[in-house]
Image (cartoon, rainbow, N blue to C red; front, side, top):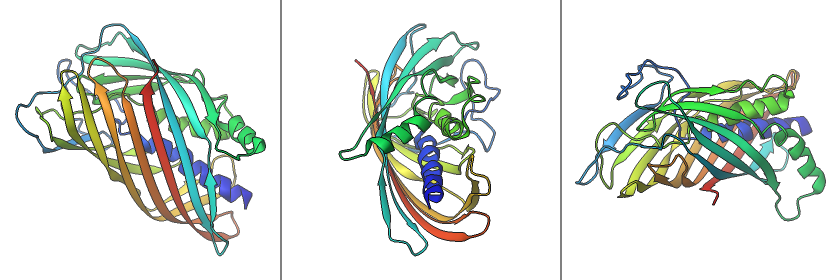
Length: 320
């Protein structure tokens, strides 16, 4: 049973870390130099304006300095409730993973684009009360060593629509478990920018951002509704809500030959808020998600029905 519980941890912990990001898909597209058009690809982020909001309205665009660097912190906390077959329900609380991100502006190749390089400066575990040192050490060995120095370069339009992203090739030398986690973590670093609609908007504006993702651990489409509640000068606040479409699919368990899981059904809930500054790529954000899945886990001989409820909370804030 230990392997199956670990399988659930990896599938729903690291994969959902990537799912939480309401950013653009890292795909290249031929966009004009001055103002982007919608990317004509089912794999690209789609932005749908639902309500333009009250007057006065304005086109919300980033204007970052030509040079600069920022440091921010992301706290990632996960808990799970798991039922395997007819066994009693088991609850699992993971330590908070605290990640330091360094973001720097780099010269963009195209006019009207924003190019950023994000680097993981460090990572640490913040334990829950009563958590055993042995458990902490096991989690630390898998998740922490691969993170420092990990880097992603992104190119976005001035309204935060991602055009392209590149992960620096440092995954090949990692152990399989760490590599699977970092492949998914890379998608959560695709862009730190908020994605705004093309149209002018005012207070109360609502738009939906849909971003198909296809990681080694999960295929899903987060659909986040963003509501503009404040906007004064360069600074504003968004309320976030929505869910995630997760189709029926088979998931291969990394580094465990013969282990697989089939997702039969899933229900999700998103919520949170983001405080942004159009002159900075960093935000102050709080994001929470709950996902309930019915699935079947197979070890090559036996198939065991399982129910998993995962709760994730993300907090991001600039480091002063």
